[in-house]
Image (cartoon, rainbow over all chains, first blue to last red; front, side, top):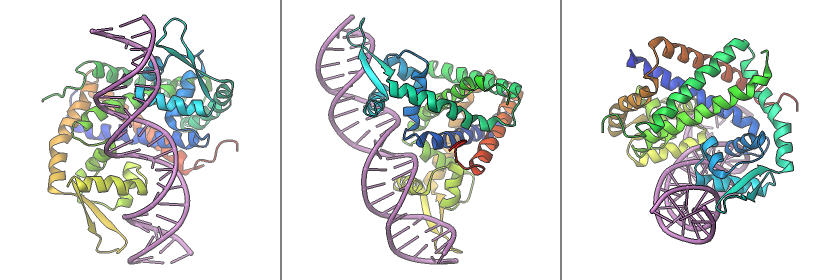
Length: 155
Length: 155
DNA sequence: TATTGTTATACTCTATAACTATA
DNA sequence: TATAGTTATAGAGTATAACAATA
């Protein structure tokens, strides 16, 4: 990278865009009486036959202790269920219940429509490009995480 | 927009990238014994002579009730101070203390360096483009917020 | 009457670590 | 010993609404 002096702008912009987007997305999700992490779990499970909490945590970036609580609240709402894994006695499978699947199927299109309004002025190409940029950034962040982990540059 | 079927991917990617980035950024900030919202307030105040809580809330997207708490915790840490506004008896000015400014000046470059590692493989042009894309998205979200506010597409 | 900021409430998330049970 | 998940704890953010003081 050439001009570090420009970083404040990119960084601020990144943060602001994140926040703005999250607060926008949260508005829709809250109407469903769900929190963002809860809805995240639901849409992550949406197209699957269930998965282990471990994988669910990796996908949603929710740490295990927290995830137990999130899953519990969704269980209380009757939207997901825990089933013991047959192969591994320590393990479980979390999956949507009928009700959970119904919520997913009924609200996800709405949610997408709600989000898609943001892209009204985008061409399909714009969207594809944005996605590619996001994937790139995602991979960069992921690499940086694993990488030097978190040891700072100079301490 | 042409193909809504592609939205799940963009959307998921957007969320994942946000989360990944935030968790990456949080790692650095937590070393300062600050939370992300707290640090956000500090860098927002960093280059200014202070501002009203109202404006601070608009910049950081923290709602007023929450902001009172965040500012209070920063005040407890001696990093910001409240001063009564001279023009408006209802109003205040929040500004960094000496200590707060020191934290800002000492850590922000580090923070930028930490973030900038993500862009090691980016050219200056890539970064500029990414920023432009983020600005565009930011504006799109901002417009959508004010716009239809939050009334759903079909209820 | 509207606005700025505080307070209060109840809930959720987060990080961390200790713990149980299986492997 | 290592792994999957739970539990416990303490702190912080969130939404919401009621409230005081000022405009």
